[in-house]
Image 1 (cartoon, one colour):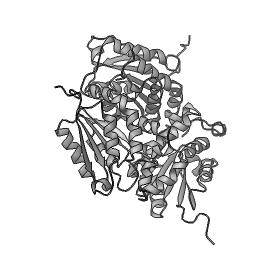
Image 2 (cartoon, helix red, strand yellow; image 1 turned 90 degrees about the vertical axis):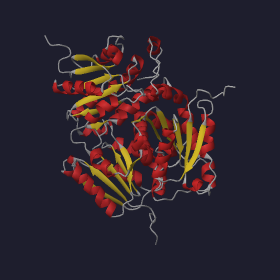
Image 3 (tube, chains in turn yellow, cyan, brown; image 1 turned 30 degrees about the horizontal axis):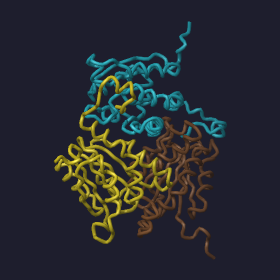
Image 4 (cartoon, one colour; image 1 turned 180 degrees about the vertical axis):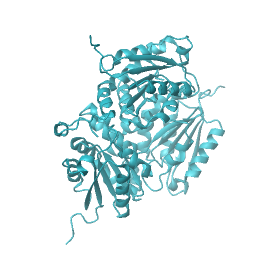
Length: 176
Length: 176
Length: 176
């Protein structure tokens, strides 16, 4: 029997949190993120690491080696001394997608001015899309909701499926 | 007889597209961009290059050597494997103007969420303004329409004409 | 008797302007910035330097050595040949806070399209928050007004006071 997720890309939801990794806090962000990915990805791996840049980077590298096409982290994008997710992931990116960071904050700004404290961002490594969300479940969900309609298009484009035909331009398809 | 464009800056419209360079596709973006520049620039040069970073960079360098004050590219700002315009141009910039990228996507976002897939940006090399637009004619036109009122001011400021006098501040002139 | 500013962080307002430093122009931006900081910071130092990157950087370093927790500059974020505040300050930052630059321009954009000419930005050096505002008093005030509600939160987070407790997440506190 065909799985309903057959053909959909494999994803990793990476919870970055000292407290969750130590078993001192419940992971609320990871499940919220995974729930929002349902329907646009296939198998979803889940992993938790502490706010250690090397641990974060290793998780990304392992996921790439496993053929993961979408990596979504939650946590470590704030301003605290232990918030090092951008510093851990950004050096691995081959391109940054500035509009993703901008739209996550623009969406959050409509709800709370605190959204601008988040250093959320996204980019690509090869054909893998990497999105770094805030750690609060609400912030993560708001940010991912803003990006969700873009993810299938981004994955197609990164894979070289540019949907290039005359009508695309006439219809105002994805900018390139 | 004086040309109506006398004194206006020289511009280059650079179409970045494998398909157009190979003669396999019609260039729709370049003419759309050139039409929108009419009235704010003088002579407009037109050039097409494939999505090759070295060809893009060489076109920029040649335009600078020719005294071009405004370079507007269209194409290669997407997420595809051949979309390397940001990687080709950004290393040449002496300053990036982040608000230009932000306002292009903010304007596009009002029309389609796909605008956030564009890695459009702008910056300066000496007193030359460089703007990298999306490749779709509609996306390029929307982005350039958002920037158009800013271009004459930006060119003046880059050339050191700061319009600095007491009334400017009282009137809330260009921020510096 | 306790000062009303007791416990509030020490701030520096840094006016960056050749004209003000030479005594040829009145400093209108510095006082406007200082007035807007009243109530959220304690002692406010004031300093003026010309648009010389080394002078700007030295002022930042001196303020850090003096225990300043908030540094707000005004001037030198435009596109002119002498506007080098981003180039002077950015290399000193340990993290950039992209949402601060975005919200400053988004707020300005509602008033004037010229806001997008500003290369305003913010970031952190250790637990010190650094904000670079435009030079025009109106632009500086508009930008700082947009950021003002975020500054106490940002200073708390930078100092490691993450206000982390179960309700914070439920209440949608600052993203991290």
